[in-house]
Length: 108
Ligand SMILES: [Zn+2]
View 1 (cartoon, protein in one colour):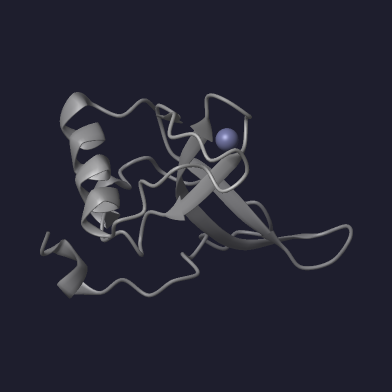
View 2 (cartoon, helix red, strand yellow):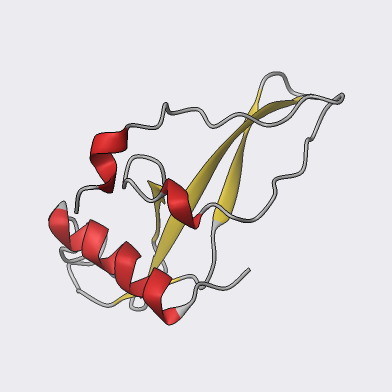
């Protein structure tokens, strides 16, 4: 699901607050584009089984070299953007975020 313009602004504010919008480590050019929506990273337990853990992530792509960066939505303090239901990938267990949510992260 795509971010609203307000959500995009919140993500950018969180990244700026943490001072991570610097030139690309690979090519030293500052040309980031944000993927319009969350990317869910699933944790793999074994070579044939995916864990029920998922890391909801904001994704930036360098428009010069194609390098991809992921930032955990929870670490950025943006759990409120996680309104898309996640799909359990094994058994009937609900996916749990890897990181614990901290109320202090809402204070941006
Ligand atoms: Zn680059």
